[in-house]
Image 1 (cartoon, rainbow, N blue to C red):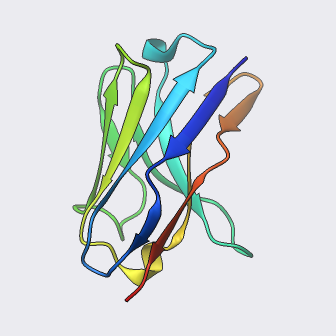
Image 2: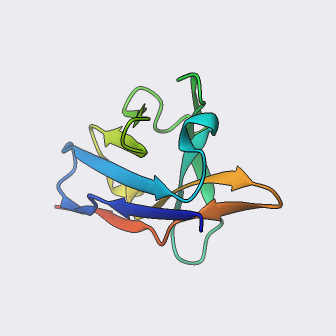
Length: 116
């Protein structure tokens, strides 16, 4: 059973940092690209960043480029999202997941709130 569990969210002040963790199970983790997305209630999900099985990263959101980085630990089936210089507009539920045919799979998410 494919499963993702995100953790590490919380309340942080503008300019602060958070490190989100994603624990994956139920599939050949090291063979798959893993992505982070985010969603604000009432808005569409945004793809944020992806790391491939070969550790190549792609940042989809220009607004986070240079502030967010993704990394993975294949030995422990973990992916991390380091978020620096957080801004109020980064407030969202953050999800990790991957595409395993026939659909993309996401975890339940972790809430990140950036506010003073």
